[in-house]
Amino acid sequence: MRIYPFRLSFSGSHANFSFFFEGFQREEISCFISSRAADNIVHSEGEPPWGNFCEVLGLDPARIYRLTQVHSREVLVLDRYSPHDRPRADGLVSRDRDIWLSVTVADCLPVYLFDTESGAFGILHSGWKGTGIVLKALALMEERWNTRPPAVAVVLGPCIGACCYRVDEGRARIFEEEFGGPDGDYPLGPVVIRRPRNGSSPAEPFLDLRAANARLLAGAGVRNLAVCQDCTFTDERLGSFRREGKDYTRMAALIGPKLPV
Image (cartoon, rainbow, N blue to C red; front, side, top):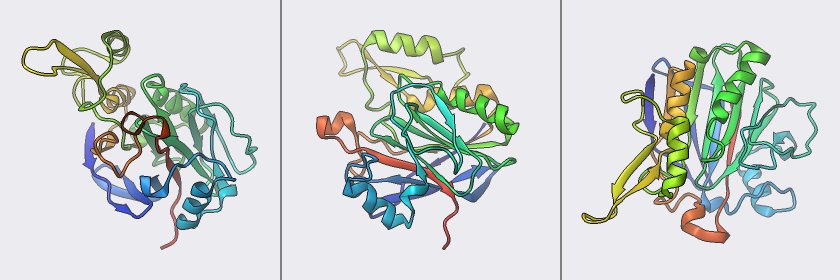
């Protein structure tokens, strides 16, 4: 698997970035993430942050499809004729270049998918409960558009990093049992890291959402993976449930057709 690390460069309310495939940047599809400067994006037409963010990007909100997210592994196929009814799911895929797909995140991992052969694309919301949704999305893309994993480019966006995502031992064991593997079978390292808080304390477990998704993608046959290095907990440009508490900032992650220059 080829790994392309990158860091976000924000322009006011958002950052944009590209897919990489076989060493080359692919710009047929646009990827965005909002920043805290865009305020709390709650995906409601009646909320100014959402409308303002769409206006900054020059996007028609009626062309953007969104979800009622439930921390699941459910993925839906959409096109321009799909109803705007905010279905309960955590992933969207399409091949329609007239629409945009969006999820919101705030420590969970946004995953961007692009089939370089069929042109299909997708966006996923993958927290610890939803880890594994990438396999559901790839299977659905294969069923609908004959997508081959080696032809798929993937971007793992900003999320809480293994530096900061401390969990209890019970959750760590569940995560490790489902997404761990033999030694050496980790493109980005182990999915659970245990480290002491200080020299004398017992080791505490930290989850690595990026590593778990990278391992799943590599096992499925994906060969090109761009990985954002920014941690939502430590980077105050980004929204973080763990850092901000109950009034946390939801960030909008969007994918869609290339915007005109």
